[in-house]
Length: 144
Ligand code: ADP
Image (cartoon, rainbow, N blue to C red):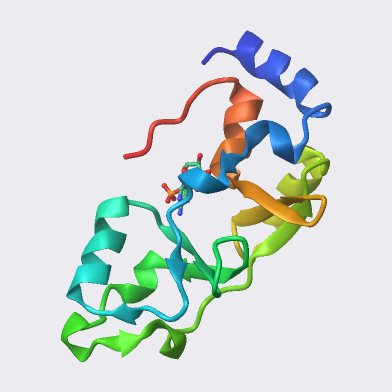
């Protein structure tokens, strides 16, 4: 990245909308709200590597909230508790046509740095702060 790329990215940024920066729904690692948090599930969550995991009810088109992986750090999987016993965070929902500037402003207000993107009432993907920053700097950010 250099300042020219950033300035160019910033100029294009105001024309970009949610749909331009989503991770499509079929690529999203999510879990059902009726799952038991045993060692196998915990291991899957660990291996997926994501810090926020959407939770769905019944079908993957019905995302209800977000589980923060860090909330499981002190959890003992031998307890095998149902996920429903855990507190999940609400997920922000935005239209596919919402500008990235507006989503960035919502993320800045705190709460969750992930939004569900819907088009004609159907979920099409998720977007996070990182996806938005990548549009701004016009480059991939590689996760640690
Ligand atoms: P993390 O903090 O989990 O690394 P980021 O918010 O930094 O996630 O996002 C990194 C990339 O991974 C983004 O492109 C984002 O859309 C995607 N992403 C985040 N969470 C998930 C998930 N649960 N399943 C699939 N992709 C995800």
